Length: 94
Image (cartoon, rainbow, N blue to C red; front, side):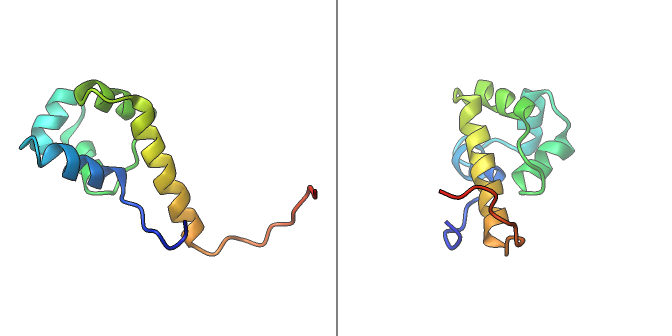
């Protein structure tokens, strides 16, 4: 998992939805009833997908909110795990 880079969900949104559908960030923001700057930050990988945004994207693109949340969680975990984790004592042993 550490060496397999993940795409930010915003990159997936851009490549798999916006570009094929010829949608602009402005049009998407209008459709989602969200601020253009926030949607732009998401699409450019500078903002995470919130639960609220996941629901909005699921409605707009006929997916599930869980699809978007899973993508965000996977990305977040990958990002943390690629860095050196802190030394934490194991509290439970088998």
